[in-house]
Length: 93
Image 1 (spheres, rainbow, N blue to C red):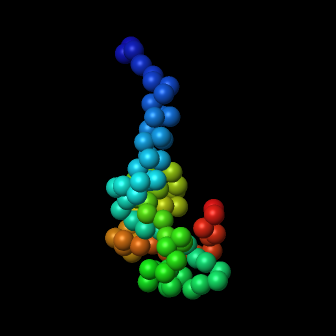
Image 2 (image 1 turned 90 degrees about the vertical axis):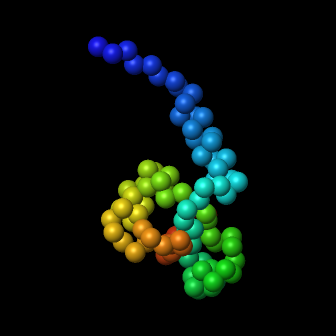
């Protein structure tokens, strides 16, 4: 059969590059807003307290989480929104 070559460093390199893109806020296509106990979530969506907003990649979120895959591919409103609200999740999670 065909010979399979494996690059054990590829996964590590890929994760490193994805983190670099995230840290530099490059190629993000959705902003995830999380609920804050002190402020209503609508405050964050209006641009307040940017520490509670995270620029993310839909592809990375969907690949890493069945929740986000369903959200972004299941025909929900969130699949087309630039900002998505996640309620009941601490920003440290």
